[in-house]
Length: 465
Image (spheres, rainbow, N blue to C red):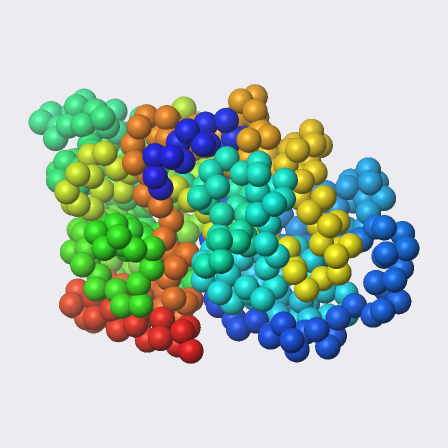
C-alpha cells in the first residue's frame, strides 16, 4: 500500500482480529436487478415505513466467529434508537450464495459485504453510491474505497489488516548470540539473501536453539492453504502490477514466479516437518507450533495473535512477538514493509426502500462515530477501523497490531492487497493444489507456473462473459 496509507491511518483504532480476515470468497453471479425488482418489498410495507419515517436494517454478516457480537450490537442499537436491526450470519464458505438468495426477498438485505473490485463487479447492480455519505467522508484514506468507472463510491472498508512473517524475538536473539551467526540483529535482515542465510544457519543449529524447525509447517491441507495461494501469491502479483502500471490483468505472466519460489522453498525446506507431510497440516497446527516454541517464524497476519495467545501451554512472551516483511529477492525490497489492506467492504443495497437505505446509513454511522459503536468496533469486533472518528486512545494493545503501526510509522512502503483481483476461488484452489503436488514431488516448478498462468487467464475470461 502506498505511503499515503501511513499518514491516513496513524490515528485510527487498531486491534488484532482473532481469526483470519479473508477466507473463502468465491464469486457468484448476482441476480439481475430487474428480476429482483419483481420481488421488491410489498406496497404496504413501504407505505408503513413512509408513514413512520423509520426504516429497518437487515445486515448479512460474513464472519461466523463474530455472529454473537453482531447480535449484541443489533440489540444495543435498537434499544438506543428504536430502529429494528436484523443480523443474519452466513455459514462459512456460503456467503455469496446466501446473499444471492436474501437480496431478492420481499424484505431484502439492506447492508452487506463485498471483498473488493471483483465482488463489486458481481453486485454492482445492488451497490448504492456512497460518495456523499458521512461514512465515506470519515474514511481516513479514500483511495481504500471501491469505486466504479462512473466515479461513484460503492464499497467502504471497515477494517484494515496486515500480514508478514511473525517471529519469536527470544529465539532470534538466542540465534544471534551463536558462533558465526549470519546477522547480529533482525534489523540486518532486510532482503531475501540475508533472510535465507540466517534461516539455513538456524536450521543447522536447531538443536542448539531448541526448535524443531525454523518455520512453522506450511499448511497445505485443502482449504487451509490460503496463506500461500492468496497471501503469498499477492506479492508477485503486486510487483507485476507495479511494473505494468495496472491494477488488474486479464493475463498474468507471473513474471515474479521465481521470487515466489524463493520464499516458498525456504519455508518448506526449513520447516518443522518434511515437505511431503504438509498436505496434512492446518493453519491451527502452524500457529500452535509457534506458540509452543517449536519454531521461530510463521507467515500470518495480525489476526494471528489470538491463535498464539489462546494455545494451551503457550510459551511465547507477548513482548517477543514481532513482524518482519516477506522478502522474496525483488530489487529494492530493503524498503518493503508489511502487506497491508482489506477485503472487507460495507455496501448498502440500492434496491432496498429509501427508508431502509437511510436506516442502514445511520446504523453504520453510529458504528464509527458514537462512543458505544466505536467500542463495539474496536474492542468487541476487533476491527482496525480506518476512520478519522477514532482517536489515538483507541489504538490497539496486542503485539501484532502494535507492530503494524511500527512499520507504517517507520517509512516503509506497504505492499497493497491485490489478491482481491484474483479471478476466482477456483483459481486459488488450483494454485494451492499445484503447490501441494510440487511439495510431494509430483510437479515441477514450471508446471506450477503454467498452472497459475493458464488458470488465471481461463477464470478471468469466464468472469468477463
